[in-house]
Image 1: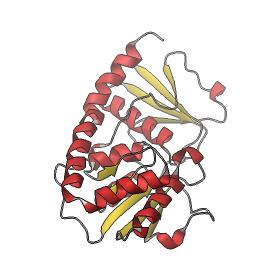
Image 2: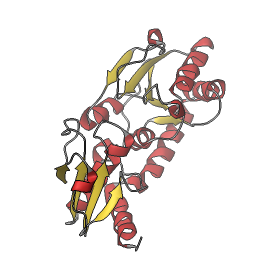
Image 3: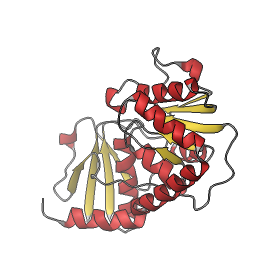
Image 4: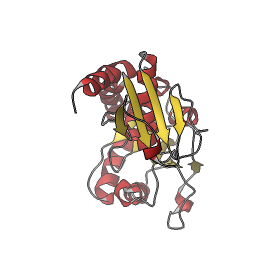
Length: 240
C-alpha cells in the first residue's frame, strides 16, 4: 500500500515522532510510506521513509495514497527503548520529568509540585528534566539536577536507561517509552499533592518499584513495532 503522512512541521513532539515511527514500520514491511511536510529536514531522528517537502499540502498529488493527518492513533515504541533487565538503581534515585512546560495539558508543573512535595517529606532524589525547548522562566530550575533540551531519539533512549523512576502527570509517548525501558512509573492523574504522595510511596518501597517495572514492561509489549505494524496494516486497509 501507499501511505502519505502529512506533517505540518517536523519539530520534536509526540505527533511527529509517532508519524515517523509508523512510516518506518510500514517501509520495513515493504509498503511505500512518505512523509509530506512543510517543515525542515529532520536531524533528531533517522528515517527510512521517503520525504516530500512542500510549501502547501495542495501541491502534493495524493490520488494514489492513503493520506494520514499526522499519525495513526496507535502508540509505537522504537525497539531501542526496550530493556529486559534493569541495572542496579542509582543513589539517590534519578526521577525523570518529560514534556514542554508551556502546554498546560502536559501538567509539567504538577510534576514539579510532586517532586517538591516528596522532598518536603524528606525524600532524596535527583530530578532529571527533558523538554523539546529551553526552559521557561516559570520553571523552578533550582530543583533540577539535569535539564536536557531537544534530545534525539537515540539520546532519549540512552538517557532513559540512566533513570530509575518516571513522574508522569499524564500518559504520553515518553511514558510508554519509559515503561518499555523498565522505569518505575508513578501513575498519572490527580493534583500535584496526590502525585507527590504516589511518588513518596514509589521512592520508599523497592518492592513496589520492581512491581511497577514488571507491569510497565508487560504493558509496553503491545507497543512493539511488529505488533503495532500488524494493527496499522489492518486499519489502513479498512475503507475510510
